[in-house]
Length: 215
View 1: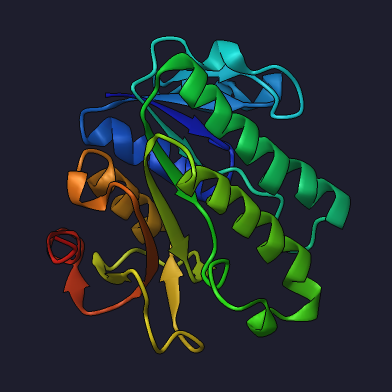
View 2: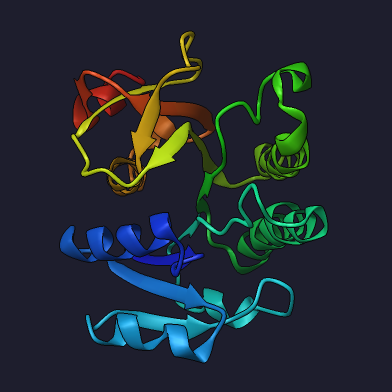
């Protein structure tokens, strides 16, 4: 599949691009700055220069699926979070519908689909932006998956996760960025994940088995 990775320069996006290529897909790394292209060219990865704050419709040419991994981060000013995590994501969803790209995976955040009363005040604007973008995707006609990983770490992936529509015990658990990328690769053409919002944390189940258990 030709997979457009929006936010390819980010920590999950970068890992995802390389894992997609290893899995036999053709990733298309969407980046915002010229200087970000070189790192992908060195690994013979297709790139496209595009900005979520401008017209980026050209990035969808020849694409079979879109993975939205862009994010402003919890420490970003509230105004920019609104622009990227909500506005940019909504534009990406609308563009997929307009161009006929039906498969769309959204990398959201754990708790974005939960009671706002559980959101900490410093992160409230971030979860709110994620929640609104996720809801826009759920109301679309796309074959979507909303993936909601918990607190991210840079440790090596274990290949073992907990992947469910709702995970009860979430407060002390984390998930590696490696494993988030690996889950996305496996979810890409798994129809049992279509139309689902899935929470993701480290666990004791292999990724393939966790996805199989969704059906």
